Image 1: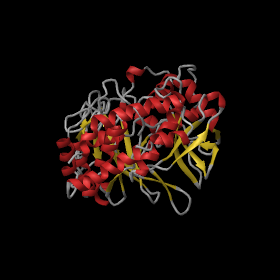
Image 2: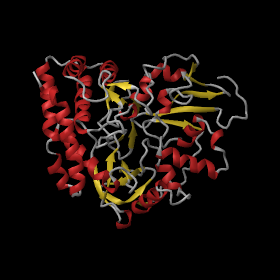
Image 3: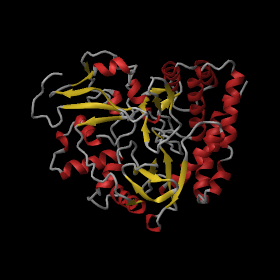
Image 4: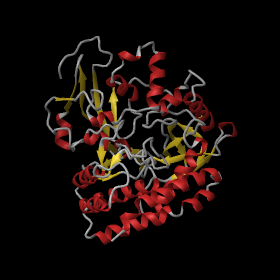
Length: 434
């Protein structure tokens, strides 16, 4: 690789990948100068493994320049390792503690801080994060209350465990934690043998659904599963009274898989944002593009059908925060890709009542012929076959109120969401015509 000025904080990073058997291999090297970031695959990786980003990275040993946008001078697959919103807030606190000015921090610096704590199987060396707490146990209530205080702006101090656990995406407070079995009271920020990996979502009175965020997402996860849509395993954890929430939602991470010897294997994960260079901060993705890309990447028409069902679910449940980073794919060691389980699904109307991912150009109320075109793109044998999927989704959504009552969601919240679901159904009932 080229030599770079020493004035840059993180001029070079080795990109590593942990395989499902625990072996760690070098994928390649990232390097930056004052204006650009370059990536180069390692020759050994080229000879033995598969492309980690087949749409945007050439699988050769040539230097590959990252575009300045939409990933802030990074290639999309590496930008996937960076947090956003909540995680960036925690990173900013860490950089300030080190006496660094945020306007001097680059995306490479942030990757170094992520180190080996990010989502997926990629890690970055040299890492700029602390590993000394690998065997430490923490009280989940303490981490959750700390996260809530930071999110609400009530403290400038952040415990190191929260920084280590906060490398996931999304704007809301959460932590990547490890638990032994079903004991959710004590957690770790690094796994011990036999641990499972979970993403715990905390709450805040300043969130749209306030302290019922986790409960409402649990309802949506239940509806999706009843519609035969794959979702991650989840668990509602009783929250301490002072948090204001009755429960926090824990989602079992699908980028981690426990092996026969009790260790956690990492799985390479790539978002649609990184895969297609779609800016997740603004509407930049279309379901037609997502369905076609899924079928090509996964080399199976089944992948397109999976995304079609999810597109219908989002449409009918008013899950309009369906941006490009909320779609992901998982790659096995031998290079095969599959859609990741459906995630970040909840009641989330946007300001203009438009979806972040469009329906062949329509942000809302797509006409029947548009949905039929999506069904064709998804390789359904007939419109009747696609209608059966729509009917299954609609039937699951009709159970919202009964499921929400079982979750002890407040009546006013149930009524608020149910009224919107009723309106959304009336606006879109045409898709079951013919």
